[in-house]
Length: 625
Ligand SMILES: Nc1ncnc2c1ncn2[C@@H]1O[C@H](COP(=O)(O)OP(=O)(O)OP(=O)(O)O)[C@@H](O)[C@H]1O
Ligand SMILES: [Mg+2]
Image (cartoon, rainbow, N blue to C red; front, side, top):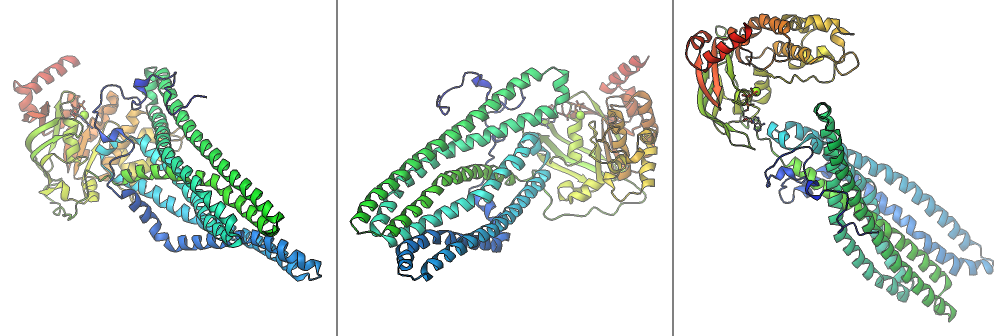
């Protein structure tokens, strides 16, 4: 067998092994998001562990106490054997039956007590670990959900999944199995050493001397295993990420016949994990063999030396028997100490990754001192939007929107047009506060979006995008997301208003059709209609439609257009559309190029002018003819 830690395997193409899953092209070399372990403040991992255990302090103490008592019951056994051989058997010979009976009953009681205590301990420790894991999974979910979009764009969902599955699992192993091992190993070491020294100083000294090579062995193992286990957990995370991302993108995978390429990439990662696993097993095997060798040598030494001493009468046979029994008990758990160190290393590596994730702060945070929006005005529905000296660039790129000012009066319908990549969606995302501007402010009725409580912002500004996403649940539930207290009538009214009622009624269970179940699968255009109805029902002061009708057929789009005046009435609206038919209902048109607003006027003004919009409009007219 080759040594996997150093050999370079033959089946892989080295240059691609560390490539992210399915992301071709060059990437920034120094992005910390390329690694599994995000920069973690010093001490964060320990603090996380303490904060998980703090609420369970009493139960942790109880669990430890149970374990201590159980160990005491276990360790009493050999002592009773020594007593039986050296005292009770001679007493029995002189017709005193009491001591042997006492030793037998005592041994039985100890066995019973140890069983009962073990049972209680297992239950108590399972409760502790279940509570810790419940808390941790909840924290990961809440925290990840609260983090801003730019985090999720860089930290893939595959990695989030591996944090809350394999990493939490590593911690479970430590809590449910590892800690018990550690405590019982340490306790037996202390107890048995003391016992051996008390029984016979010489034998005890030999046993204690054997701890030195064992200790060195453990240290060596720990150092080597640390590296190996981190590599292993990184490798399994890469496997999960690749898996999740491939399945998430299964449509393009099919469309572009990427199966073979993906499979090759997956095979590389899968094999790498297997090799890392092999490395870990090899380390463990070396450790187990080494520790057994030392242990057996020590036992052999003690038996030999002890037997000569029994023969010359300087040692009682019972003491030698007890010493050998104790030594077996002492060395047995050393293998398991290796296991414990494994689970400890894995858990430490995992916990560090989780702590790194939990240390991330949202780049779009909740305000610390929130401000209320002024009361809505009855004469002027909708809210005024002001971009005040705003500029913006995504974290991963250069400036997308150079500094600009823009006022959208309350109640106005503004169409935004411009070529692909001009920055239209970016403008909309700033207004919905998916991102904060790099400089300047976005104001809603004079209040900076950063000062608005998130729930109020989400109620006030709603964005419907091209990718209409439906959550698992019924069609009615999906429409009611923006207003969970809406009645069935409200839901149907919204659906009717945008022309979705017809197709929904034709579904197997109508509005109660589960969108993820068979028969509930609905088309992209139908999804957009549901998203539209959702936005209408939410009744926001500011509505943003970003290519929201792009998947509709011409009659479908006509139907939405017809409803549009109703939908947009009484609110401020930003409508982004490539199809100029949408633009005609707007009060005002903005034309964007390369992040700048290059034209601004009513549709009629711009059509009659000599600018970009007039060109676009002419081309569009010609295409219709
Ligand atoms: N999440 C992102 N991270 C980094 N850069 C981005 C991101 N989203 C958009 N960009 C970049 O910002 C620029 C503007 O993109 P934006 O999506 O605003 O264009 P758009 O006008 O909406 O285009 P389209 O008509 O194709 O939807 C583009 O150059 C794009 O590459
Ligand atoms: Mg866009």
